[in-house]
Image: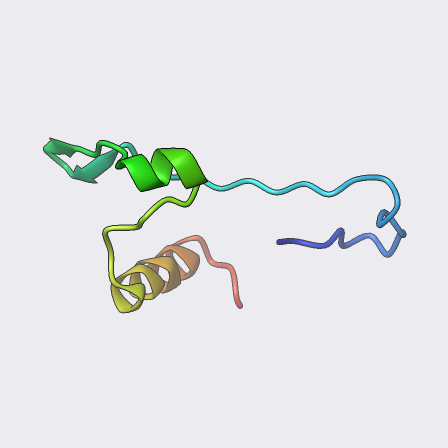
Amino acid sequence: HQAPTDGEDYERLAHFHVEFYPPNRTADKLKYLAGSETGAGAFIVDALPEETSARLREAIERNGRGV
């Protein structure tokens, strides 16, 4: 979640939350939702946290943004 950065108080106005899930398990395999994912709205990610964090760090470095 990202808070506004302009110093204003937006807490009473709105809360914005977005989650993105790729439709593919791999480059050539489509991901199908399981019954538990569809019913509960809890999506299982087919990646290790270490791999995902490494890719996120690389993307941040590529785009020149510090953490």
